[in-house]
Amino acid sequence: MQDSYQPTSYARLLRQWEETSDALANTASAYLGLCSSLEMLSLSKQTIHRGDIISQVDSVLKHKALHDISIAQLVQSQSILIRTRNRLLAPIQSLPEVVLSLIFSYVLHDCDPTDDQDIEWQVRAFYRRLYTMVSVCAVWRRFVTSMGSYWSIIPIIRESHLSVSRQTVSLCLSNSAGAPLDLVVVVPRRAPHDMIQGVLNHTSRIKSIHIATGTVNLIQDIFDQLVRSDDLSLLSELSLCATEPSHFRGIDSTLSTMFSFESYSRLSKLLESLTRLSLYGATIHFRGLTFSTKLTELRLQQLLVGSTSHLCEIIEAISSAVELRHLTLISLYSIVPAVPANVICPIISLPKLQSLVLEDLHYDTLSVILKSIEPGPHKLTFCLTDKCLFRLILNNAHQNVAVDTTQLWRLFETTAVDTLIIGEHYGTKVMESPTLFAILAALKQLKTLKLDECTIDTNMCALISVFPEPFESNMEYKTKAISEWHLTSAKIISPEAFKKLVLGHGVQTMVLSGALDHTSNDPMDWRPLRRGDEIVEWLAQNIPDFCFERAQDHPNRFISRSWQRVR
Image 1 (cartoon, helix red, strand yellow):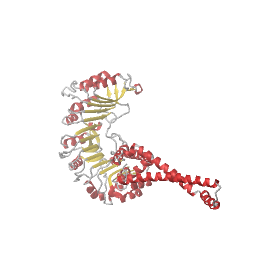
Image 2: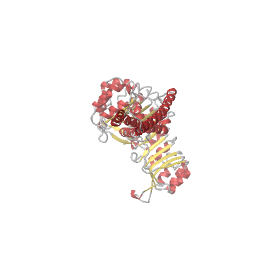
Image 3: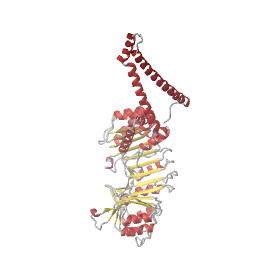
Image 4: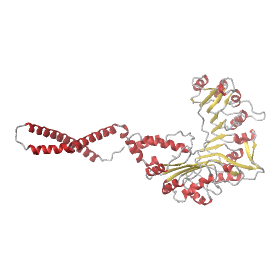
């Protein structure tokens, strides 16, 4: 850490310390000599005023003031010198404050980018690391408490398994010392208005807000309280999450929205400054909505959109985000009427888009989105579930109507997909060999394939090999080579067929975890793969970039309700 002394004052201080040390040693030596002289004097035959000497010595010995103070100060001086020496010897002391701050920040924000834990657990882990550093030593404690940015995450959390006290919130606000704030509110049932009230005096410092509640009404209550101050000019990131989608019960009813009617004017103003926006569990009115030209990341998840026309309104609103770089659309429920309306959706261009993630969407919703967003240099990730095989139709009661494989193939054949993610748990029908083959055959530019809990047998390997037999007599489906594979919790029944599949695709990168078949359907007969297994060693020798992982590892499926931890 940087010294507070200038070079001239530092040199002067060191010189004064050396001179005083010498003077102290000389004075102590002289004092000892004088005490010895008094002793010699008392033994001599010289005529002296014994009463005066005895009185003065008694005064010193009786109160012990001189000796006690001197000894205590010398001991304290020695302790200070030892502490100073140890600090100077510690490597951490030689680092500039900016470097030390960077190192501590890396420790505090150390997290797996694919970690899908809810944000309350991420905040808990952050503060656990913070308090661990505070408890190491006095030097670390002073440094950590002096860094306002380390205390800028303000947690208002009232979960059954985790609850933050009002005193903790006050301490964070105090230690943050004017730094921009990240407000995290996680309350399932009731808004802690007293704790939120304590934050209202600091709204001008809030740069991000994350609210996760049980109901939409609770989000409205908390959000209205925060925006009432009309002083959120620094706000750039907003994440709102309603975990109980009760509004989905009446799928044809009026849409539940995140914001009350009174707060919509303030919402429009806030959108002008946002760079990141995430909505989970309820929608907003998108008609006529304009996003900020600063918006770079948008995530919409688990929303009841309504009709196709409402979906088109969302797409139209997205087109206003001309700086958008990352767009994630997950589990959007768009209902098609039994008698389709003639709805023309806009064709939009997102010139700055870098990544587009589409997950868990019904066929019609997926079709509208793919046809509405112009192709570009962005990377497209599909995370397909069984919903893509159905249309959500609204008649007397909403129902899923199956889409045949040919329709799916025609939708995907003109789509440039970079990464395809399919998991057995969410895509049982998609993982069936004929359907999976049709999808892979349609995706001509697929680079990365991620399969979770797939069964690798001769049938699967034959169907998705590079040059399989025609899937149907009237269609010449052919699978293109895929260079990168992520196979997690895979069940390998036919290692030899798997080897041929790898060689046929010319696989360059593979991540593998799973189990080997022991010739039985009984899961107890499956044995986890090991590094020494013949198939694992063969893959390591024949794939340039091969990574073997433990069987419990799973891919990042993008299905967590949590927003990436505030940064």
